[in-house]
Length: 222
Image (cartoon, rainbow, N blue to C red):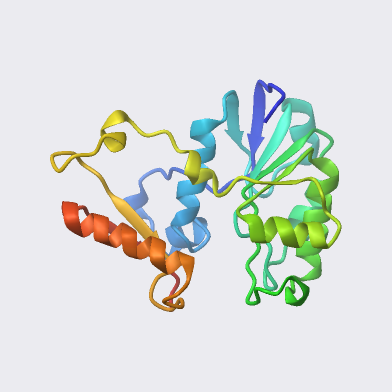
């Protein structure tokens, strides 16, 4: 992040729940944004940012955040979409005076042609706010960075998903058949066989099959 901050606020989903077995699964699922992958990248943020991190959620008090914290970190993976409504969050961000660090923001587009990408006005307002209040916007990939630059937002840097920087212990780094490992693939099944994602997933599944590793199949309802 460049500068050193001692008190860091994080806009995130709950990572832990008291007595989850007593809560209906659908309620827990909604709390993580209908995607268990959200738990992965938010958890990664807590692992690889040094300092005192505290969750403030999505309904934070901007005045309290300005008073108590040095910086506001936003794990914003896949937030740019034609269907997401960020009006409430935008209203809060306008009142934030401390530096903001958006991490891994991604564009969810149905077109690969940058000129045909469509997001709604609340997403457009969000990305402009983040550009104004952040030194850099960390993006999920080169496609998102290219599109942001095409609409005039230049302070972007491609970093990938925060989960890419997860710290694992040595047994995951030097894996053998006697070790323990769990693999996760995503966006499989309905993507073109020629896509890069499909090729990566095939490699993951092949590796898992060779070493008899458990696999988490994370995917959308389709």
